[in-house]
Amino acid sequence: MAFSKEHKEEIVEQYRQWIDKSKAVYYLTYNKMTMPAINDARAKLRESESEMHVVKNRLFTHVLEEKGYKFDPKTWEGNNVVVFAFEDAPAAAKALTEITKGNDVFAVAGGYLDNALLSPSQVRALADLPTLPVMRSMLLGTILAPATQLVRTLAEPARGLAAVIKANSEKQTSAA
Image (cartoon, rainbow, N blue to C red; front, side, top):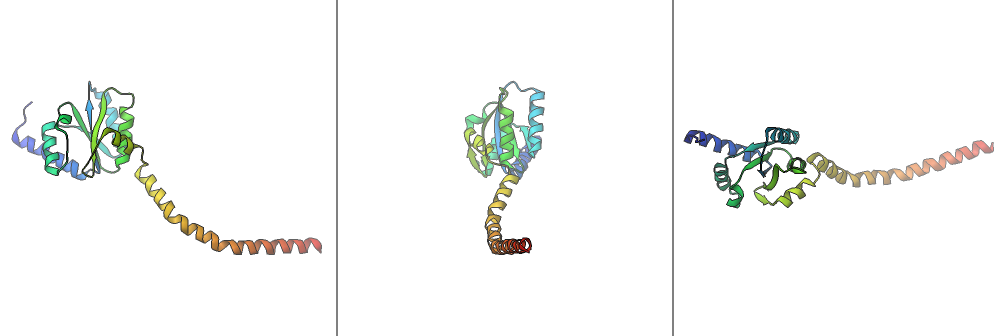
């Protein structure tokens, strides 16, 4: 289906906006894609605030060149879908791992994280990272650990003194 020049410009502008809003961009090849398969994939990706779109390869690679992304032109010769991770890159990578596991429809071909090209194995490694809320809680726990230990250390002598006084008072009441 031929698109008019104006329609192509609208598509290219939409691709630019999606890339600008994304924390990460992943691309997958697909084979024998069915509507139930793509609907399931989109539903899983929505949970991680990501979107999957079938793209026009030539127009999308034009936007990639324009934005300074490196890519292998052969990667963009077949059927591709692109996933835009708008919030949490590892969460979207986890969703992609779930989607492609035991599935012959989709295969992760690569991605981009902050303009850096990712191989399929790097996308899988990114999927193994904890999600953003978990990372934040781990960081907060690490930051608060020294303060918690300091409070315990400062409170321990008073706690020990209170235990000694209580034991002494119990000893005196039992002796009387």
